[in-house]
Length: 360
Ligand code: DP6
Image (cartoon, rainbow, N blue to C red; front, side, top):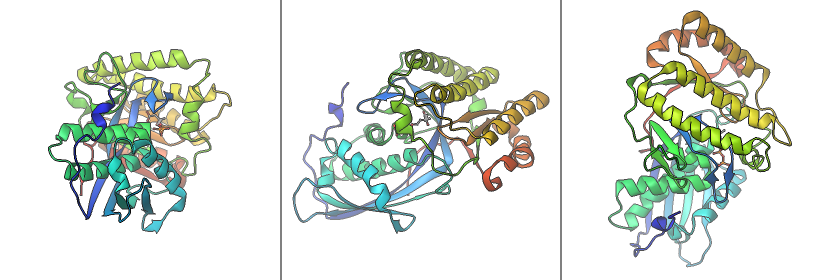
């Protein structure tokens, strides 16, 4: 794998002080990433919708260090408050990327971050959080190195974000991003996410995603632990083959616009992800009774109303309800009347497909 392309080979310009702010989105996988090897290489390719409203806004202030040493110095603030407990994850991220971003030794960094979604909503913030830091670093890089192309900047931002959290590699661009080498997706790579390279059927434009917040608590099992349980998992190898096959099928569905097939594949992927959790050892269950209540209600509604609503899940109890834009009014009413009661404090977030990172 050609990671050399991400090493810094030119001389760096000298800057005393600068700061960048980026807004980067969360994403929801249609074909799931679950299982990886070192360093953050996925066991199968995955594809996600980039979201629009769920995002992180991060500012990094870079101030040239007076001493020349190989220590990464940073302060971290989340929603205005210093967050010591988030620091180890970010320190580990900097360690993983230092080879590719040697300039992080030259600056003291002050990181200020906030999410558009409530902190303890159970929505994974690692994808948007780490892609935002990666994007700020690339802004600095393109300031101290001349001539970097937009394409390279996005690629490297996704490459760095991946080293922080796999799914973060899919949170730089939009509306559909593939991460993981796949024979049917031109330009795809295990190292970074790429925009889905084919014409997408108009039915998927402005696709809606309502996130039903069933459980806002801390997850009992982190994604990282879950991924690790795919080593020695009895069904792992067949799952990785299946996921890659599903990605091929999804590619065709996205181009042709067959919603019945879309629904079948998306829901099957969600349940298979959770089946992997149920069948790992130690086994665990992230769904809650209300997750199942919502799924059953969605199935009923779909049948009765001849709707194209469907659900997907990430590594938690919350349910992502997906539906075409043209059904927005009816489905939103259904969610408010029939599903919101299964959410903590009736809380849900209406989102839709978005287009990726924005500089602020
Ligand atoms: C279930 O990207 O959170 O959401 O690479 O360990 O940070 P790490 O894991 P993470 O895993 C996400 C898994 C998932 C499926 C997906 O987004 O594809």
